[in-house]
Image 1 (spheres, rainbow, N blue to C red):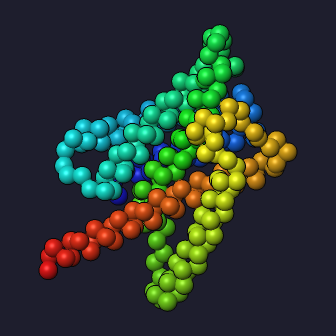
Image 2: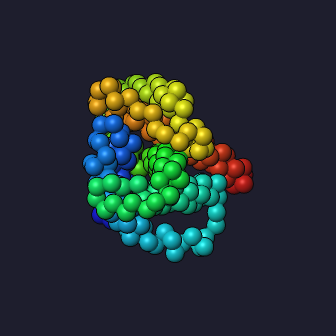
Length: 231
């Protein structure tokens, strides 16, 4: 794999880790949250610079279901992150306080919605490219039976984690934040930091899992259509 592609995937992972801590406000506190937001801004700029050729390719070539899905997710993710960053700038208290009167209430609601949309969409974005990371972790064993058993166990574990992540996501009423129904974040400050972060990880994995298997299903039916055309 080319070094540039490796850099892109490492950057994606760095953004994901940063996002996990951004979503764990009760763990980091306000000041660290703002600095993490600045770090995310830098990572987003770097990500877009590394992928500048992608923008030039938008109007070239044919579009299938997966390409349309990736384009839509990327556009929505960029929009959500811009909304989160702009509202975050209006809300900040430590790094570069603006204290603009009359903007706090609107900025707070927009920041909550934008943050959770960014969380979901970045998870989906990762899932749409998850095959690359699975390729990194591919196990090379001489005994195919052992390899198949290992992958079966890993798939079962993935299903369990994804189901639990989906349960946590629904139980946290996150859709209320995403649809502007809840104007304040209700956070459990008594929960252990490691549990807060692990909750974020499994919720992120739920969306990664769903979008990854969406790509697998689309690829499967695309393969069936191609085989029928070839007959």
